[in-house]
Length: 360
Ligand SMILES: Cc1cc2nc3c(=O)[nH]c(=O)nc-3n(C[C@H](O)[C@H](O)[C@H](O)COP(=O)(O)OP(=O)(O)OC[C@H]3O[C@@H](n4cnc5c(N)ncnc54)[C@H](O)[C@@H]3O)c2cc1C
Image 1 (cartoon, rainbow, N blue to C red):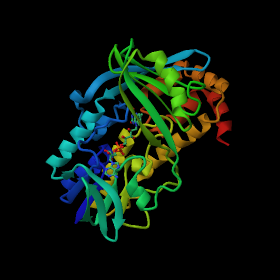
Image 2: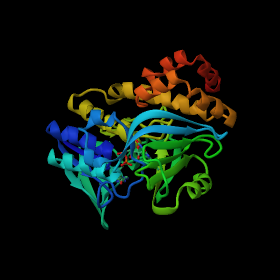
Image 3: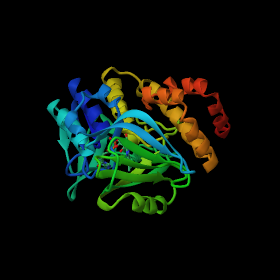
Image 4: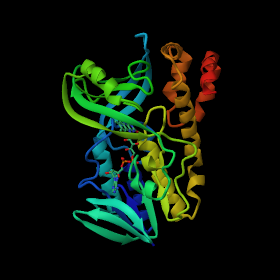
């Protein structure tokens, strides 16, 4: 049986690697000439990444010790957290090299165009190339052409992230996030690579450039490079497999991101792993994904709630984070699994329930 994976990012390479290890013939088709380039990501991850791959010291550009959360009224709270700033292109290359070692055939400069009967059509240089495959895994990112061709993207909404890597003066141990008027429907961030270089960005559904420019001017002395791109919004109604049983979606293609942060590296990799498991062991992929989609559903509800906040709500919520018990709970639970700490938070700080009114 031949399996085609469209997209050579982390989600696709996790699926490809797992399938090749199980003995399948796997081809990965990537539209760019090198995996991981251009980069469109901040590369911030929790230690949950090391549950999926062995810890790669050479991919860690900076190890952070905490997050400073800024409220619209100018107050701030710092919470101890262990996070990693990755060489994101390096991560993609590491996963691609590992997949190729396991037997995956990587075809760069192949852009998925469409399905034609049982064939999958790619553009390679100026030609169109037809491939026959029994299964096609769409791992082609937020705007997934595979998902679109399979009719799976109908309800999708997007945020747009804009970021620069730039020079300035930064505390290398702490990353910062700003909520409220700086970027009303998401947040703004400064994630240091070192004391002199940071990744500075915002994401928003509407006019991200308008919020980005003043924020960037404030924090960056010299721009070294630009990154950016669409971030899909997870929706409980999304599907990762459709009426065509050949097609599966993983990672951003399947909308499998945390709506609170826009983070999708770990959740995408996990979905790739589960997709390989589903195919290998003839299990239902959507069923295997349930524990993950349950967590993403919670992130979705939290995002929906926060998007109804005014600045006063943000001020009150951020000030509740000063509570030492709250800090302790947030420090010791990775954000990938909110079901494991949400009730603990509500028990530790019952006033947090006041924000639940925004859910309805
Ligand atoms: C500004 C910004 C900052 C972010 N910061 C973080 C962060 O700090 N932490 C985090 O966890 N997440 C972050 N994300 C999200 C994260 O980048 C994605 O969730 C992650 O890259 C998803 O991996 P993926 O493999 O599913 O998709 P991608 O990494 O997007 O990979 C898709 C691959 O498919 C290829 N492709 C696309 N179309 C085709 C086609 N038609 N044919 C062939 N190949 C194709 C692309 O070239 C790409 O290589 C950020 C996103 C943005 C926009």
